Amino acid sequence: MESKSCCFLATDKQRPADSATLCLDVSNGFPRNDTVVVNATSSNQQNTCILDKIPREEIGLDNYIELRNTMFLRVCKIFISLLIINISEGIRLNITGSSFTKNKYSDSHVILAYNNVGPLMCVSDCMMYKECNAVNFNRNKLECELLSVSYPGDSITDMDGSYYTEIGGWKKDKDECTPNPCEVGQQCIPAMYNNHICLEFEAPCDVNPCLYNNGVCRNKVNDYRCICPKGYYGDHCEYTPCTNVHCHFDGYCVISGSGWYCNCPGGYYGTNCEHTPCTNVHCNNNEYCVVSGSGWWCSCIPGYYGTNCEHSLCDMCQSNWTRFADSCYYPSTHMQVHNYHTAATFCHGQNSHLVEIDSPEEQVFMEKLITKTSSLHDFWIGANDIDHEGIWKWYNGSYNVLNYSHWCAGEPNNALQGEDCAALNVNNIPGKNFCWNDYSCKSYHNFVCEKSISAVSTTTHTHTQPTGTLVWRTVARH
Image (cartoon, rainbow, N blue to C red):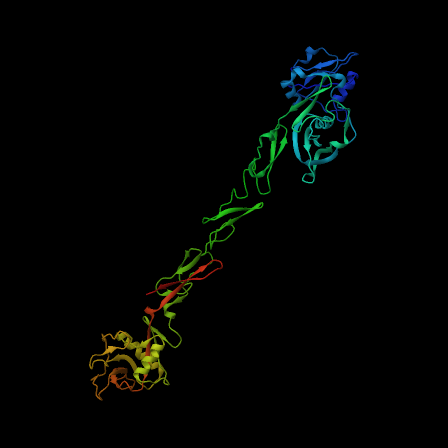
C-alpha cells in the first residue's frame, strides 16, 4: 500500500512502543487513515528519521505508526531535504497541564482547520503558530480548529461534540519552537542541530473570499465559511437586505442597519411604495382619481363637481333658490316688494339678475314658481325699454333684445306714459294671469332673481397624500 501523504515523528530515547503510544494520542486513541509509515525505532546512537513516500512493506521495520497531518504534507513537498530531524531534540506530543471543556465552541478567528487528528495533537499544533491561543476540537469528526481568540468580541457557545480549550494552561517539553520564534502567519517546525524552520502557510481565507459587505471569513477543513453582517447573506455575503426588494412607482430600497425600507416618491406610501396618492380616494358618481405630482384630484364629468365629485349641478342652487335647466331662481317673498331698480340692485347683490325668460318652458316654470309664493303682487322680470321706447331688452348686463315674450293682450301699451319696465301679472284673470305687462319702473312689485349655473366654476382640489399642503385647481364645468 503506497502512502498518500507524509508526516514525521521525532522522539527522545524511548522504546518504540512508547513512541507509538505518544503518536496515537494516548488520551483518545483515534485511528489514523491515509498515512505513511514512519520509523519509530531508536538505538544507543543519535538516530535520524528520513521521511519519504515508501510502501509500508519496503520499510522492513519492526515497529511503525500511521500518521496524517496535512501541514506536514506541505513540509514534505517543499522542504524534503530539511526533514532530517534530530531525534533527541525532536517534536513531542508530551502535552500536559490542562483539559478541554466539553460541548463548547468558540466563535473566533480560525487560523487553520484540518481533520484526522486527536485533541492533544491539536493543542501541540497550536503551539507551532504564534497567533494561536486556543483550539476547538470536534470529537465526532476528528477536526481541529486553531484559533486566535480576541475577547470580548468573540463568544463561547454550546455545541454537541465540540471541545474547547485555551493554550495558556497547557505545557510541553521545551524545544526549538518554545518559545515560538516565528512571525505571525508562520508555522514553527523544529529541525536538526537545535534549529527551527519558520514556514509560511496558506489558508482558504487568505484570498479574502468574504470581501463583500464586510463579511468575516472563517477557515474550515479545506474550505471556508463567511459570517455576514446581520441582514446580509450569500456564500460571499454578496446579498444585501435590499437584494430581493422591489419598490414600486420609482421608489428605491434603502439599507437601514440590518433591515431596509422603500423610499417612496412624494404622495406614494406603503412597505413597497405600492400605494399611490389615489389609493384611498373615492370619487363619487363613477368618476376616477387622477394622480397629480404628489397629490390627486377627481376628474368629474359635466354635471358633477366637488372634491370627490360628490355634488351634482342639480344641487347647486342655494336654499330658497329653485333649479330649472341651467339656472337657479329666487322669487321674493310678500315682504320683499320693491321698485324695478331696487329689485335689480337686490338681485345683483345675490350675484344674479332679474329673471330673463327665454322660452315657453321657462315661462311655464315661472308660473309654477310664482304660484307657490301665494303672493298677490305682480313680479318684476328683467325686460325694459328704458333706453328706447318700444325696444325691449333684458336687464342682465348684456341688454339682449328679447327673443321670446309672453305679453298680455294689447301689451305693452305704455298707457300711462313711462311704463318702461315689465312684470308678470298675478291677478287670476283668465287670459291675463302670468302674462307680461308694462308698468312704471317706480311701481312696487315682487320680483324674481335668476343665477346661471353655466357661469359657476366648480373647484377641483389637488391634495397631497397622506398629509401635506393643499393645492387648488379651478376647472370650469359647462
